[in-house]
Image 1 (cartoon, rainbow, N blue to C red):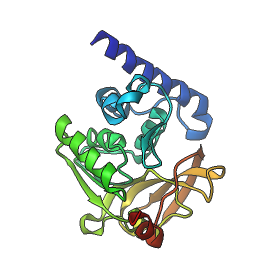
Image 2: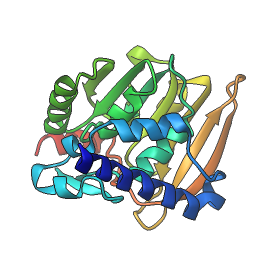
Image 3: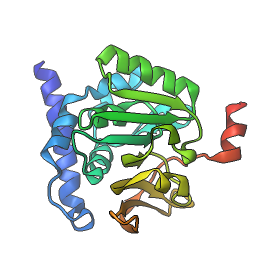
Image 4: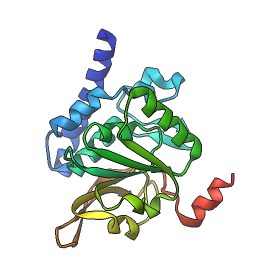
Length: 229
């Protein structure tokens, strides 16, 4: 337990250091206490390949197979903070991946609906959720750009891959008063983390937070072709 506490402290210290370094971009010098508590609670080593568990609490991304990554802890914490979650919220996540970001969200809201295009990653994440007792998560295999309209509208939406533009279908599934957090850019060298706010009248405001690097969001026909391989 003492070793694990040291690892958690290293993770939290890494996040806090990044927040201080980027505070002029993100507009705050600390993240919400609830977010930081969630980051301290979810066992990150359970969401990475066994051979990488020694690095699970470092503040950096790690490969999880299929050309995908588990995001840097700071980025997970920042994107979660930007959603401004409340305990009663229902949230849509595009890109289940390892399930780590999903599990963080599950600590902070009533329900998480998570869409993943890669069957194997989704199955592994579902197994992790079951073993760790996260019972407020529903998963779906599909094209993330289409969202999950059956459960819309959502109080918040988070996208964990970079889109070339903000998908209109996701905007349509966001509740008035909700936030959408999404990396946007046509290449890894020109991506920006966008905070999209929909006001109570349905008007959209977009704020670019800081430069980021994410794997691409595969959509539409690209998704169908990918699933055949």
